[in-house]
Picture (tube, rainbow, N blue to C red):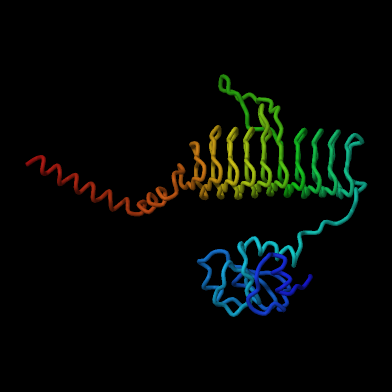
Length: 341
Protein backbone atom coordinates (compact mmCIF):
# COMPACT_ATOMS: atom_id res chain seq x y z
CA UNK A 1 0.00 0.00 0.00
CA UNK A 2 1.55 3.34 -1.04
CA UNK A 3 2.36 5.96 1.58
CA UNK A 4 1.85 9.66 0.85
CA UNK A 5 2.74 12.84 2.67
CA UNK A 6 -0.10 15.13 3.62
CA UNK A 7 1.19 17.66 1.10
CA UNK A 8 1.08 15.07 -1.69
CA UNK A 9 -2.54 14.30 -0.84
CA UNK A 10 -3.39 18.02 -0.68
CA UNK A 11 -1.85 18.57 -4.10
CA UNK A 12 -3.81 15.60 -5.44
CA UNK A 13 -7.18 16.83 -4.15
CA UNK A 14 -6.55 20.54 -4.64
CA UNK A 15 -6.54 21.50 -0.96
CA UNK A 16 -4.52 23.61 1.47
CA UNK A 17 -2.61 22.04 4.38
CA UNK A 18 -3.00 23.36 7.91
CA UNK A 19 -0.39 21.72 10.10
CA UNK A 20 2.66 19.64 9.26
CA UNK A 21 2.67 18.88 5.49
CA UNK A 22 5.28 16.13 5.97
CA UNK A 23 2.95 13.89 8.00
CA UNK A 24 2.90 10.39 6.49
CA UNK A 25 -0.53 9.02 5.57
CA UNK A 26 -0.83 5.27 5.04
CA UNK A 27 -4.58 4.70 4.78
CA UNK A 28 -8.06 6.16 5.18
CA UNK A 29 -10.77 5.61 7.80
CA UNK A 30 -13.80 7.15 9.54
CA UNK A 31 -13.75 9.94 12.11
CA UNK A 32 -14.41 7.50 14.96
CA UNK A 33 -12.01 4.74 13.88
CA UNK A 34 -9.09 6.62 12.33
CA UNK A 35 -5.76 6.56 14.15
CA UNK A 36 -2.11 7.35 13.58
CA UNK A 37 -1.11 7.40 9.92
CA UNK A 38 -4.72 7.67 8.73
CA UNK A 39 -6.77 10.38 7.08
CA UNK A 40 -10.50 10.98 7.53
CA UNK A 41 -13.05 13.64 6.56
CA UNK A 42 -15.81 15.95 7.83
CA UNK A 43 -18.60 16.72 5.36
CA UNK A 44 -21.63 16.97 7.67
CA UNK A 45 -21.48 19.81 10.24
CA UNK A 46 -23.42 17.77 12.82
CA UNK A 47 -20.36 15.55 13.22
CA UNK A 48 -18.05 18.51 13.90
CA UNK A 49 -17.73 17.72 17.65
CA UNK A 50 -16.17 14.37 16.75
CA UNK A 51 -13.31 16.12 14.95
CA UNK A 52 -12.07 17.41 18.30
CA UNK A 53 -11.86 13.82 19.57
CA UNK A 54 -10.54 12.08 16.48
CA UNK A 55 -7.20 10.30 16.71
CA UNK A 56 -6.64 10.62 12.95
CA UNK A 57 -3.40 12.06 11.65
CA UNK A 58 -5.31 14.36 9.31
CA UNK A 59 -8.85 15.47 8.45
CA UNK A 60 -10.29 16.77 5.19
CA UNK A 61 -12.54 19.76 5.98
CA UNK A 62 -14.35 22.55 4.17
CA UNK A 63 -13.04 25.18 6.57
CA UNK A 64 -10.54 25.14 9.41
CA UNK A 65 -11.84 23.53 12.62
CA UNK A 66 -10.60 23.01 16.15
CA UNK A 67 -8.70 19.71 16.26
CA UNK A 68 -5.32 18.30 17.16
CA UNK A 69 -5.12 16.59 13.74
CA UNK A 70 -3.56 18.22 10.71
CA UNK A 71 -6.12 19.47 8.18
CA UNK A 72 -6.59 19.77 4.45
CA UNK A 73 -9.07 22.51 3.62
CA UNK A 74 -10.93 21.81 0.37
CA UNK A 75 -14.20 22.83 -1.25
CA UNK A 76 -15.78 19.34 -1.18
CA UNK A 77 -14.30 17.17 1.61
CA UNK A 78 -16.27 14.05 0.73
CA UNK A 79 -15.20 14.14 -2.91
CA UNK A 80 -11.64 14.87 -1.81
CA UNK A 81 -11.81 11.89 0.55
CA UNK A 82 -12.82 9.70 -2.38
CA UNK A 83 -9.81 10.95 -4.31
CA UNK A 84 -7.55 10.28 -1.32
CA UNK A 85 -8.90 6.73 -0.90
CA UNK A 86 -8.25 6.00 -4.58
CA UNK A 87 -4.74 7.45 -4.26
CA UNK A 88 -3.93 5.38 -1.18
CA UNK A 89 -5.85 2.18 -1.82
CA UNK A 90 -6.77 2.15 -5.50
CA UNK A 91 -9.73 0.35 -7.03
CA UNK A 92 -10.07 -3.45 -7.10
CA UNK A 93 -7.48 -5.00 -9.39
CA UNK A 94 -8.73 -7.63 -11.79
CA UNK A 95 -6.61 -10.70 -12.55
CA UNK A 96 -5.04 -10.81 -15.99
CA UNK A 97 -6.24 -14.18 -17.21
CA UNK A 98 -6.96 -13.52 -20.86
CA UNK A 99 -9.69 -15.68 -22.36
CA UNK A 100 -10.03 -18.91 -20.45
CA UNK A 101 -10.41 -22.06 -22.55
CA UNK A 102 -13.44 -23.07 -20.47
CA UNK A 103 -15.35 -19.93 -21.45
CA UNK A 104 -18.07 -20.58 -24.05
CA UNK A 105 -17.59 -17.97 -26.77
CA UNK A 106 -19.45 -18.12 -30.07
CA UNK A 107 -17.35 -18.10 -33.22
CA UNK A 108 -19.58 -15.27 -34.43
CA UNK A 109 -18.86 -13.08 -31.39
CA UNK A 110 -16.31 -10.27 -31.54
CA UNK A 111 -13.99 -9.80 -28.57
CA UNK A 112 -11.96 -6.61 -28.10
CA UNK A 113 -8.35 -6.29 -27.01
CA UNK A 114 -7.06 -7.04 -23.49
CA UNK A 115 -10.26 -8.68 -22.28
CA UNK A 116 -10.31 -11.17 -19.40
CA UNK A 117 -13.05 -13.78 -19.74
CA UNK A 118 -13.19 -16.29 -16.90
CA UNK A 119 -14.25 -19.95 -16.86
CA UNK A 120 -17.89 -20.72 -17.69
CA UNK A 121 -18.72 -17.26 -18.96
CA UNK A 122 -20.91 -17.37 -22.09
CA UNK A 123 -20.72 -14.95 -25.02
CA UNK A 124 -23.44 -15.69 -27.59
CA UNK A 125 -23.72 -15.23 -31.35
CA UNK A 126 -23.01 -11.80 -32.84
CA UNK A 127 -22.24 -10.27 -29.45
CA UNK A 128 -19.63 -7.51 -29.54
CA UNK A 129 -17.37 -7.05 -26.51
CA UNK A 130 -15.27 -3.88 -26.30
CA UNK A 131 -11.66 -3.51 -25.20
CA UNK A 132 -10.40 -4.10 -21.64
CA UNK A 133 -13.57 -5.80 -20.40
CA UNK A 134 -13.77 -8.16 -17.42
CA UNK A 135 -16.28 -11.01 -17.63
CA UNK A 136 -16.24 -13.17 -14.52
CA UNK A 137 -17.40 -16.78 -14.18
CA UNK A 138 -21.04 -17.43 -14.90
CA UNK A 139 -21.60 -14.21 -16.86
CA UNK A 140 -24.08 -14.64 -19.72
CA UNK A 141 -24.01 -12.34 -22.75
CA UNK A 142 -26.96 -12.96 -25.08
CA UNK A 143 -27.18 -12.81 -28.86
CA UNK A 144 -26.50 -9.44 -30.51
CA UNK A 145 -25.50 -7.70 -27.26
CA UNK A 146 -23.02 -4.84 -27.58
CA UNK A 147 -20.73 -4.12 -24.64
CA UNK A 148 -18.54 -1.02 -24.61
CA UNK A 149 -14.94 -0.61 -23.45
CA UNK A 150 -13.69 -1.07 -19.87
CA UNK A 151 -16.83 -2.81 -18.59
CA UNK A 152 -16.86 -5.13 -15.56
CA UNK A 153 -19.43 -7.89 -15.22
CA UNK A 154 -19.19 -9.79 -11.94
CA UNK A 155 -20.11 -13.47 -11.47
CA UNK A 156 -23.51 -14.57 -12.80
CA UNK A 157 -24.45 -11.19 -14.25
CA UNK A 158 -26.80 -11.61 -17.21
CA UNK A 159 -27.25 -9.37 -20.25
CA UNK A 160 -30.17 -10.59 -22.38
CA UNK A 161 -30.24 -10.60 -26.17
CA UNK A 162 -30.05 -7.35 -28.08
CA UNK A 163 -29.25 -5.06 -25.14
CA UNK A 164 -26.73 -2.25 -25.51
CA UNK A 165 -24.20 -1.40 -22.82
CA UNK A 166 -21.96 1.67 -22.91
CA UNK A 167 -18.37 2.22 -21.76
CA UNK A 168 -17.16 1.74 -18.17
CA UNK A 169 -20.39 0.06 -17.07
CA UNK A 170 -20.29 -2.16 -13.97
CA UNK A 171 -22.85 -4.91 -13.42
CA UNK A 172 -22.56 -6.55 -10.02
CA UNK A 173 -23.13 -10.24 -9.37
CA UNK A 174 -26.50 -11.86 -10.07
CA UNK A 175 -27.96 -8.78 -11.70
CA UNK A 176 -30.23 -9.27 -14.71
CA UNK A 177 -30.41 -6.77 -17.56
CA UNK A 178 -33.01 -7.17 -20.30
CA UNK A 179 -35.31 -9.83 -18.91
CA UNK A 180 -38.94 -9.82 -20.06
CA UNK A 181 -41.07 -7.05 -18.67
CA UNK A 182 -44.07 -7.85 -16.50
CA UNK A 183 -46.59 -7.53 -19.32
CA UNK A 184 -49.77 -9.58 -19.54
CA UNK A 185 -53.18 -9.14 -21.15
CA UNK A 186 -55.96 -10.51 -18.97
CA UNK A 187 -58.80 -12.05 -20.94
CA UNK A 188 -61.65 -14.07 -19.44
CA UNK A 189 -59.73 -14.59 -16.22
CA UNK A 190 -56.48 -15.74 -17.84
CA UNK A 191 -53.21 -13.78 -18.15
CA UNK A 192 -51.64 -13.90 -21.62
CA UNK A 193 -47.97 -12.98 -22.01
CA UNK A 194 -47.22 -9.94 -24.19
CA UNK A 195 -43.98 -10.23 -26.19
CA UNK A 196 -41.43 -7.71 -24.96
CA UNK A 197 -39.83 -6.43 -28.15
CA UNK A 198 -37.82 -3.51 -26.72
CA UNK A 199 -34.34 -3.73 -25.22
CA UNK A 200 -32.39 -2.22 -22.33
CA UNK A 201 -29.80 0.50 -22.92
CA UNK A 202 -27.24 1.16 -20.21
CA UNK A 203 -25.39 4.37 -21.04
CA UNK A 204 -21.76 5.14 -20.14
CA UNK A 205 -20.61 4.91 -16.51
CA UNK A 206 -23.77 3.21 -15.23
CA UNK A 207 -23.48 0.76 -12.31
CA UNK A 208 -26.07 -1.91 -11.56
CA UNK A 209 -26.09 -3.45 -8.06
CA UNK A 210 -26.27 -7.11 -7.12
CA UNK A 211 -29.61 -8.89 -7.63
CA UNK A 212 -31.13 -5.93 -9.43
CA UNK A 213 -33.41 -6.47 -12.42
CA UNK A 214 -33.83 -4.16 -15.39
CA UNK A 215 -36.73 -5.20 -17.62
CA UNK A 216 -36.65 -4.77 -21.39
CA UNK A 217 -39.37 -2.61 -22.87
CA UNK A 218 -42.64 -3.93 -24.23
CA UNK A 219 -42.45 -1.69 -27.30
CA UNK A 220 -40.08 1.12 -26.32
CA UNK A 221 -36.62 0.68 -24.81
CA UNK A 222 -35.75 0.84 -21.13
CA UNK A 223 -32.92 3.37 -20.67
CA UNK A 224 -30.60 3.98 -17.71
CA UNK A 225 -28.95 7.35 -18.26
CA UNK A 226 -25.27 8.17 -18.22
CA UNK A 227 -23.60 7.99 -14.82
CA UNK A 228 -26.66 6.69 -12.95
CA UNK A 229 -26.08 4.21 -10.13
CA UNK A 230 -28.61 1.51 -9.28
CA UNK A 231 -28.24 -0.15 -5.87
CA UNK A 232 -28.76 -3.77 -4.86
CA UNK A 233 -32.14 -5.51 -5.31
CA UNK A 234 -33.69 -2.67 -7.33
CA UNK A 235 -36.44 -3.49 -9.83
CA UNK A 236 -36.91 -1.24 -12.87
CA UNK A 237 -39.94 -1.92 -15.03
CA UNK A 238 -40.28 -2.15 -18.79
CA UNK A 239 -39.97 1.05 -20.80
CA UNK A 240 -38.76 3.14 -17.88
CA UNK A 241 -36.43 6.05 -18.60
CA UNK A 242 -33.92 6.95 -15.88
CA UNK A 243 -32.13 10.23 -16.54
CA UNK A 244 -28.39 10.91 -16.17
CA UNK A 245 -26.64 10.80 -12.79
CA UNK A 246 -29.50 9.42 -10.71
CA UNK A 247 -29.03 7.40 -7.53
CA UNK A 248 -31.45 4.55 -6.83
CA UNK A 249 -30.86 3.22 -3.32
CA UNK A 250 -31.23 -0.55 -2.67
CA UNK A 251 -34.68 -2.18 -2.75
CA UNK A 252 -36.39 0.62 -4.67
CA UNK A 253 -38.97 -0.34 -7.27
CA UNK A 254 -39.78 1.71 -10.38
CA UNK A 255 -42.84 0.60 -12.34
CA UNK A 256 -43.00 0.48 -16.12
CA UNK A 257 -43.11 3.48 -18.46
CA UNK A 258 -42.03 5.89 -15.72
CA UNK A 259 -39.67 8.79 -16.49
CA UNK A 260 -37.10 10.13 -14.03
CA UNK A 261 -35.21 13.32 -14.76
CA UNK A 262 -31.53 13.92 -14.11
CA UNK A 263 -29.83 13.83 -10.69
CA UNK A 264 -32.76 12.24 -8.86
CA UNK A 265 -32.22 10.40 -5.57
CA UNK A 266 -34.65 7.58 -4.84
CA UNK A 267 -34.43 6.28 -1.26
CA UNK A 268 -34.46 2.70 -0.06
CA UNK A 269 -37.68 0.70 -0.52
CA UNK A 270 -39.36 3.52 -2.42
CA UNK A 271 -42.15 2.45 -4.77
CA UNK A 272 -42.95 4.49 -7.88
CA UNK A 273 -46.11 3.76 -9.88
CA UNK A 274 -46.01 3.46 -13.64
CA UNK A 275 -46.72 6.04 -16.33
CA UNK A 276 -45.74 9.13 -14.31
CA UNK A 277 -43.01 11.74 -14.68
CA UNK A 278 -40.55 12.59 -11.91
CA UNK A 279 -38.73 15.85 -12.54
CA UNK A 280 -35.05 16.78 -12.34
CA UNK A 281 -33.15 16.83 -9.04
CA UNK A 282 -35.99 15.22 -7.12
CA UNK A 283 -35.30 13.54 -3.77
CA UNK A 284 -37.65 10.81 -2.54
CA UNK A 285 -37.34 9.71 1.10
CA UNK A 286 -37.03 6.05 2.07
CA UNK A 287 -40.15 3.85 1.85
CA UNK A 288 -42.20 6.55 0.13
CA UNK A 289 -44.94 5.67 -2.34
CA UNK A 290 -44.87 7.98 -5.36
CA UNK A 291 -48.27 7.94 -7.11
CA UNK A 292 -48.35 11.25 -9.01
CA UNK A 293 -46.10 13.38 -11.22
CA UNK A 294 -43.37 15.19 -9.26
CA UNK A 295 -42.09 18.69 -10.22
CA UNK A 296 -38.42 19.61 -10.59
CA UNK A 297 -36.45 20.07 -7.39
CA UNK A 298 -39.05 18.57 -5.06
CA UNK A 299 -38.25 16.63 -1.90
CA UNK A 300 -41.06 14.27 -0.97
CA UNK A 301 -41.78 11.77 1.80
CA UNK A 302 -44.47 9.41 2.97
CA UNK A 303 -47.08 7.06 1.62
CA UNK A 304 -48.55 8.52 -0.47
CA UNK A 305 -45.58 10.82 -0.96
CA UNK A 306 -46.14 14.53 -0.36
CA UNK A 307 -43.90 17.59 0.02
CA UNK A 308 -41.34 16.89 2.73
CA UNK A 309 -42.19 19.69 5.18
CA UNK A 310 -45.91 18.85 5.04
CA UNK A 311 -45.10 15.17 5.52
CA UNK A 312 -42.97 15.86 8.59
CA UNK A 313 -45.72 17.94 10.19
CA UNK A 314 -48.29 15.25 9.39
CA UNK A 315 -46.22 12.43 10.86
CA UNK A 316 -45.53 14.39 14.04
CA UNK A 317 -49.30 14.41 14.62
CA UNK A 318 -49.67 10.63 14.32
CA UNK A 319 -48.63 9.85 17.89
CA UNK A 320 -51.10 12.44 19.24
CA UNK A 321 -54.08 11.23 17.19
CA UNK A 322 -55.54 9.05 20.00
CA UNK A 323 -55.62 12.06 22.35
CA UNK A 324 -57.08 14.28 19.63
CA UNK A 325 -59.80 11.68 19.04
CA UNK A 326 -60.70 11.64 22.73
CA UNK A 327 -60.91 15.44 22.80
CA UNK A 328 -63.13 15.51 19.72
CA UNK A 329 -65.49 12.90 21.20
CA UNK A 330 -65.72 14.91 24.42
CA UNK A 331 -66.41 18.14 22.50
CA UNK A 332 -69.02 16.34 20.44
CA UNK A 333 -70.83 15.26 23.60
CA UNK A 334 -70.71 18.80 25.03
CA UNK A 335 -72.08 20.24 21.78
CA UNK A 336 -74.92 17.73 21.79
CA UNK A 337 -75.78 18.69 25.39
CA UNK A 338 -75.91 22.35 24.38
CA UNK A 339 -78.19 21.49 21.48
CA UNK A 340 -80.55 19.59 23.81
CA UNK A 341 -80.82 22.62 26.07
